[in-house]
Image (cartoon, rainbow, N blue to C red):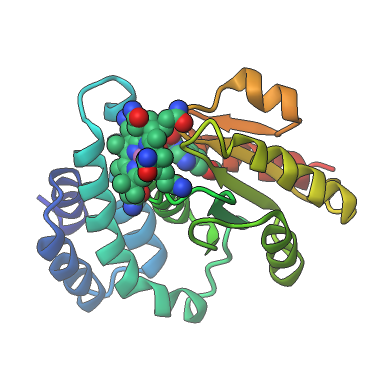
Length: 215
Ligand code: B1M
């Protein structure tokens, strides 16, 4: 088995130490950073996402796989600039105001980062003003919002309204997720995408940057 295949297996199995060791080894063997990223780290996360969608894997396994992938990503991260890999786009992500749930947001953030995006993770309890400020500072194309409480879902609407008021809605696309959120709610508040899970978050992010690029 080649080293990239071994990386795939180790990520799917959530073997964090092994992923770190194999990433270092792959670099020592002279494999291109972009190849290690796409074939060693991103490819298995796609498989993890598919297996989650088909019910073969559950959330804890997806979290552990994500952590294993992040270990490899942390080793490659400082090298991205040197090898000239351009991110697909920048996403500002956060759990909305009033909401302290971080797990789903962090998982989505990790998987979208793994798909080649620059992620600006604002954490939890993020106000509409903080989202707007960060989009301006980072020149982001995407805004990802997470809400786990029916009582904080209106903060998503307030954030979209704040982006509109700041004149940013023609430059950014919004994606919302979290257990109580639905496509119907996304349509109602004018969000551009709804992600019922992190794997769909990746798909939506890829689709929406393409829509922006085609303008
Ligand atoms: Co809370 N809590 N909680 N809680 N908590 C829920 C959400 C709840 C459903 C439990 C219940 O009553 N059955 C309920 C909400 C009821 C409602 O409003 N409908 C609830 C409540 C009531 C509360 C408190 C109010 C409890 C209290 O204090 N009385 C309180 C609120 C605090 C606050 O936020 N202001 C509270 C607190 C907490 C803890 C702090 C203890 C803890 C959070 C710890 C942490 O996050 N670090 C917690 C937890 C763990 C949960 C449950 C058990 C699990 C949530 C979770 O992490 N799921 C939850 C019950 C449940 O959901 N079954 C519950 C795993 C996670 C991977 O899934 O976040 O859905 P999820 O993310 C998915 C997708 O939704 C999607 O991708 C992820 C992976 O597939 N996704 C995105 C999410 N965000 C995305 C963003 C994207 C894309 C995709 O952007 C691009």
